Image (cartoon, rainbow, N blue to C red; front, side, top):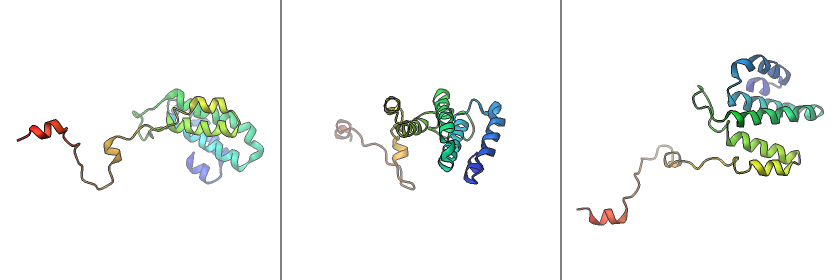
Amino acid sequence: MHALKRAGRHAEGVLRAEAGLGLWSHSPDFFFALGDLLLDWATQDLGRAEELLPMIEDAWQRCLMLGERPDLEGSVAGRGSHLAARNLVLLYQVMERPEDAAALMALAQPPAPTRLEQAQPGAAYQPAAAPAAAAASAP
């Protein structure tokens, strides 16, 4: 779907999505990519936007219903949670639905990074400093 979106072949992308729905109905990544494809189509063809906006919303809502699926090969963290919620917040803001946007605002925040994720690439691992009391009693 992503390649067809990039090529501007939106209708073909939707047909492929319909054909693959039975295989991928459990994948938030599938619905995230479908919403992205449909959004790109709506921005490229504003005459279709009114028809496509409910489908975009449905695709990203489906991501949230499915939740994260790290068990699926190649899954992207966040597509079943904060990334889909962020997209819906932006969509609801454009559609002038502030109550719906506000309802998802907290979910749209990415989780706090772990210490390992905060480390700079190539930096040596530095263990947490020992508590002051333990350091003072060490020989």
